[in-house]
Image (cartoon, rainbow, N blue to C red; front, side, top):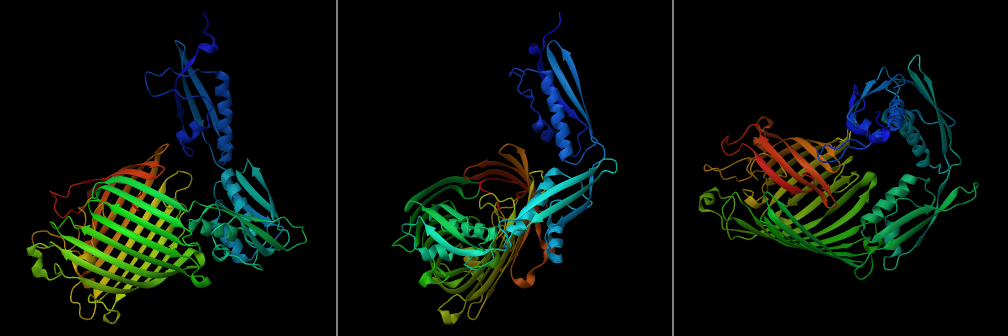
Length: 585
């Protein structure tokens, strides 16, 4: 008796011959429900017409990737009502882009060259439909951001299947050259209009640009005063060149509470409570009270941010903190710190932010072991007074503050604490750090890179930098695979004492596995040196390892295993396991 189609079930599905597209990418194109890997789950129903439709989908997927000669066959084996499907793929040659031409508008040579070099599709590369759409979008975006809000672009592709070439033609209608008109603001209740206008990157008469609209929107959200921000050009007759803009905001609740619990291999249990008051006494001011506890530190912090102080582009930031820090590598050693800082901050072009001001600090170390006292690095019970001038320059171009996949962060910080500012601890320091994040094509893999360099130098009457001001390296946020803060100079019994020069870096690949689960593979390096004159890159310590990340609403939960490649103590430094919430960097 012949078995009816309705009684056939799919036991296995195999794809053979895929090279350019991964097997998983091809399976995502299929309408057939794949069989489960769990042995107790019933296999899905198999319908031959669904398989035929899926073959058509695969042909279309390959054509979008530039393969116009692909051959796809499906072989089915039926036994006892169960079907095994094997899809055979022969990709064949791919279509090469031989020409890209733009007509309808003149672009300066350097601009056109830059667009071609940075575009997702170039002459000589394999033609892909996503690359073509991305290139078309890039050309249009240029005109939208350079005074042509009504620009339109049409494109066509001529495929020569015999020569395996593709010619791409874009025709642009730029429309009239336009400028920003007046900006009308509505929706604010407590936030002064001057605070909102101070974050706009455009003014009446500037060349119209959607990029400036998006950047202004981003800056307004960064104030954390608004739940929604909408910036919309008003409709005007085609002959009107100055376009008014409507800015509508919806303010957040005036008070909010943030709670956080977590665990890390080094700081162990940690808890955090934060209170925020928005628009304190009007003026867009923010008051933050923050309390944090962990094995390594306990801290209370209060921060008042006053945007557009005295109706200038400057933001005033006042912050005070009380902190007690533990140094687990030195038995019972603690450091109590009080800090008060006054900073002025201003936004610069290209997403740079400049901060400068003054920091007053009091540090009191205690419970310092007797074997460290002869080093005269730190006097227990003494109150160290620091009066610092500080300058910081920072650029953040990342697309996500918690889990970035593109962009980068550059930070430069300089301190100087001379005697005439009232310091009894005199020193100068500079720290530079660069972080970059880059996706690798359409693979979902993100390559993350970090490099950090620091120097600190005693000045005037200060002969040695105390322990609490020195650099340390090693651990979950530094060079994984080594003990926390253990790299660099140590006493004869192995106690780390830090140093005054630091080099650190990491290279990490973040690889998607399944849904919210990702793998990481990393190479870390770094070391601390007793003084800048001892800096020697040949003494860098290296570590490699692997880990897992599971994405949650509060950031990735991670497990890393690090292996030191040139260990300090081969017995104690064979591997380290780290648990964390959030990316390492």
